[in-house]
Length: 317
Image (tube, rainbow, N blue to C red; front, side, top):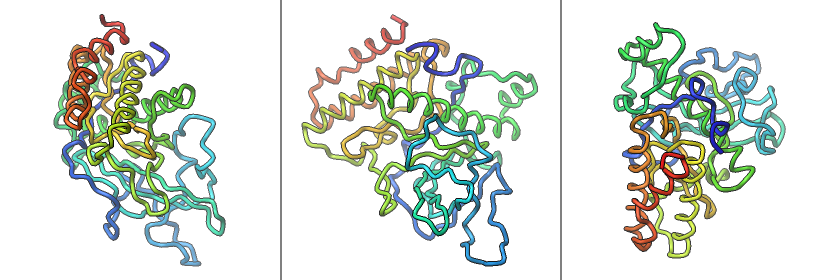
């Protein structure tokens, strides 16, 4: 896996979103959901029946870029479906994640979705993104200048690129995981502007998200299994020439014994980005420290040895 694992340079986008310093949160019932930032028309129709709740909207499936095919059987794609806002799953500095139920009225067809909404240009965002934007360009010089100058327009463009980068990375990694089973990520359902819809990873009956690795206290056997899964996932990324870029126990979920990697807008090209090897080494150091602190032998989690392996897999050494 090399050049074809992700879009080629020029089409591949990378960015940064920071969630790892936020407190773990589950669904906050009763909290008003934010509107879709780039889709002001995604509001409920004023139908005569009045049967729909204020936070209901028609499914936006027909206006979105879709995830990889074949679509999972659980995913509702009918245009007659309604999207109902249920609350906030997680808040972050650059984006919030909401819980949405997509259901076809008067049927048993429904699914839960995690909807990640990057903040618009009026909100604080992407204040630590410079290293992740190394080598990133768009075709129009005006847009490049706006992004470099962090104008309001430029910041909105960056937000859109972050969402597109995460969607592209998740799409490719999902396909790799489906084919080879060596990496698990949420299925990327659809993308509209700065809104990314994802598979909800957790308990759909209660609307409770899977715990982050940082919240878990695994027994020795499970700890070893999670570490092995993590190494496999990092090797998959490295063979594609990439690093997560912001890996920590806070953006790894544990669901039914499976490690699921999340928050990938800042995926880094370890070859094209001059700081790529440093990002990769930091990823390894952070997660290795956590596993060592939980009791895994230090010789097994040696950051230098794993970093060297991943750089070789990426073709750098």
